[in-house]
Length: 191
Image 1: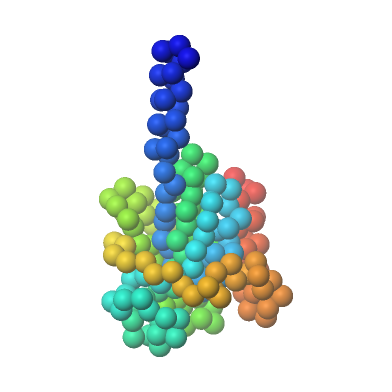
Image 2: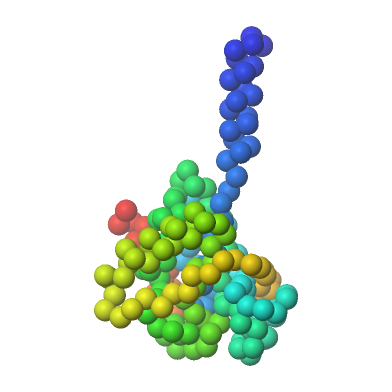
């Protein structure tokens, strides 16, 4: 291989290796809803249900539902920033939940269902602050979304993963999750 061709090939390899997937952690009600909705967004490569924002290590679903761990039900979204931007993912967040209700989404009530953005770095914090400010005029009530640094993220139990995809006929999925997935489909088609 000629030196210039070798240099170009090595540069291309280095760039592809450095294009590390990005992650974003959000909570907006039941994690099944956000997981199902974000899984259909082009550029999102994985969505995982979990717990974050609390003070108990390795919490269980039962502990989080007991409202004493401080954790919210969240999703960790892994995405290709060349295909979907952080700003677009935050913009879509306002489509699939009501950020003006404190500790509640519909019939799901409790601090584990709060609206929360857990930023991993200053760039995510700034993007989230801008997203909140840009979204506020869309809502009559004040956005109460918590904006906090991501300290720890804990993956939820296996039976919570891909719940909507595995259980599309379940009552909660039909009554609640499907509506949010349909809202996301419309939003994704719109842009």
